[in-house]
Image (cartoon, rainbow, N blue to C red; front, side):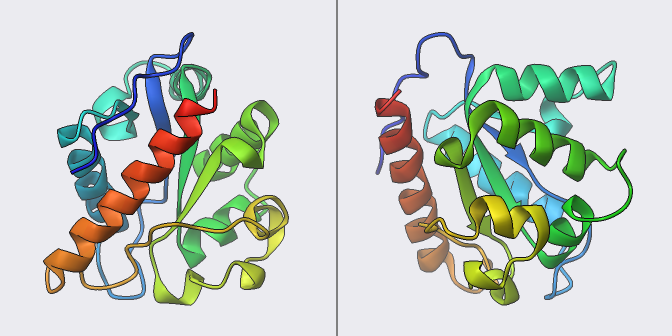
Length: 171
């Protein structure tokens, strides 16, 4: 069991968790899978900014506040997320969050978390996600049936918690 590092000074959250709300390649609701990751990290004592829990009022103001008040940004990477970030809709929440996070945090404070098996090769990521995070290693992924593999899920939660702790301890 990994104990959460203290939230770094000047921040309210360890991480802001950006992700898309679509179906993944396994037909899962990606938001529900991300919610489960959020709940597991929260149970370990991590403070994670998660839209469904934190969002109220102006969406843009809340996204800005969430990123600014978080030490790190965790990116749930699906093919749909990559396409939304690199798409033509400049008002898409994934694109807005990712762009702002990259400008405010840089890749060194962003944690890539593949949510689909087709997204497990960072060199294949295209567009802004590939440009910013494609050269970064990832430490945990949830690109499998997490209900059928509870031990693998717990191992990946542990790896993700260790990565968050390591990066927060450097700040």
